[in-house]
Amino acid sequence: MTLSEMREVLRRHDLRLTKSLGQNFLHDGNQLRKIVAAAELTRGDSVLEIGPGLGPLTELLVEGAAKVLAIEKDARLIPLLRERLSKASSLELIEADALEWLRAAPRSWVGWKLVANLPYSVGSPILVELAQAKEPPDRLVVTLQWEVVRRIKAAPATEDYGLLTLLIQLRYEAIDWFRIPASCFFPPPDIDSACLILRRRTRPLLEASLESRFEKVVRRAISQRRKQMFKLLREDWTVDALQAGFQAADIRPDTRAESVSLEQFAILTKSLTKSIAL
Ligand code: SAM
Image 1 (cartoon, helix red, strand yellow):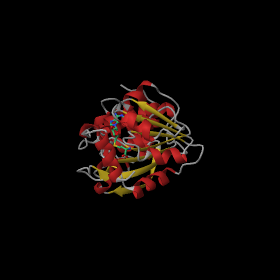
Image 2 (cartoon, helix red, strand yellow):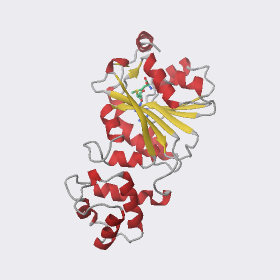
Image 3 (cartoon, rainbow, N blue to C red):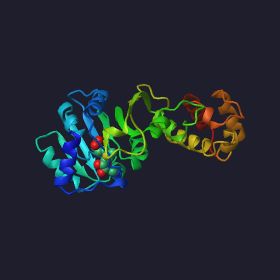
Image 4 (cartoon, rainbow, N blue to C red):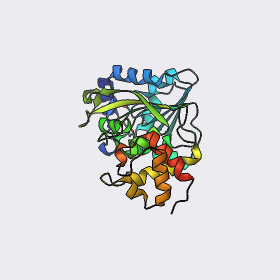
């Protein structure tokens, strides 16, 4: 879908874009093809797209996947999408707030890939929701604000490393990313964007039953960046349990959470589960 086609569709339907819904539509054919290539679609894949908008990505996805489930919140766009993609029998289109929909109907996402130019206002919560699903998607190919991409793929001891990094990286590895210039969107957003490719870890760092404990530990440890995490974790754990856990994970007691690796947090979580939270 070219920029002039996009303008024409909007004009014909007398549609004004809504900033609060993050309606910056991607019209650059090269970037759209790069996103689809990053998804590495096979004929058997099912794809979840959140926020199809006018459908520039959707029309490429339906060509490569067995099934595309697209969830769009803006009711005005649904008839437009139905008309444009009327021949795509593999497409299921749902009008809903994707975050509410995901929370209301937990399901298995095994065999699914998320491929989406996410609405910026809810991009991070949607990603966390899917990454923490009981059976999360195999791959996430997501276009987001550059600042959020940096936070997800951050390494320890950097400014961007934090809760979002740890919650997503527990189950996913960031395998690649590329910048998408603002000029590729209509209207161009004020902020930079990038597409991030996340692959589900084949070997989980923690067994599923320990993941909620991991989240409790990292949320507490990272709650005040300037404080030593040992002191923060004393809110929930005994000094003895923490000393054993810090030793097992090779973390010094005066360390701040921002320099503790994901693997160290995983070891600490395993050790702390052996003890009883206060
Ligand atoms: N995929 C299209 C593209 O690449 O041009 C549109 C992407 S645009 C950044 C985000 C889309 O998400 C918009 O169509 C917007 O209406 C929709 N949207 C915003 N919030 C949503 C939500 N909570 N659930 C589902 N769709 C949402």
